[in-house]
Amino acid sequence: MHRLLNAAELIELAQDAQRKSQNVACDCTKTPLDGWQSQPLSLDESTLVQVGTLISPDDPEPTYAEYPPGSSPYWSPDAPIAPRYFPYNRCDVWACSTCSRLYLRYTEGGGYFVDRRIRAVKASLIEDAAL
Ligand SMILES: [Zn+2]
Image (tube, rainbow, N blue to C red):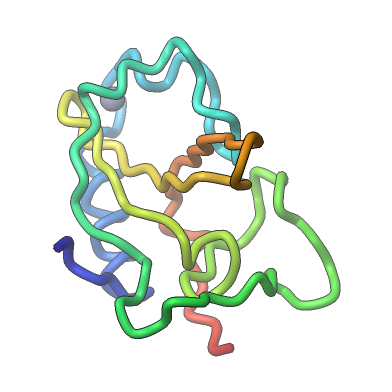
């Protein structure tokens, strides 16, 4: 079981990761991951280590509502990261063991359509939005 992170804890982790990875060149940044992407083949996922999760063990059916309600900034590199909203409520939190950069990952779809997606965490985009 990985530790469930709330928004404040995620911000803290992200700020710490940004400090450590500042000006550190790393292969994990080959493909820009500022917005959601299908996990690029160039990414060596063996360097990623899970450091927490945003998946609440008390909520087996997390909402598909996106934040902010009414618009769908899903793919935008500036889309807010609101841990209680889709898709963040289905994400685990990973860190690159080489450079400390923080990433969110989840699996989109089901059945024959499965897409593993990844997005870099930027502390300034994290919003503690209530459902
Ligand atoms: Zn890295």
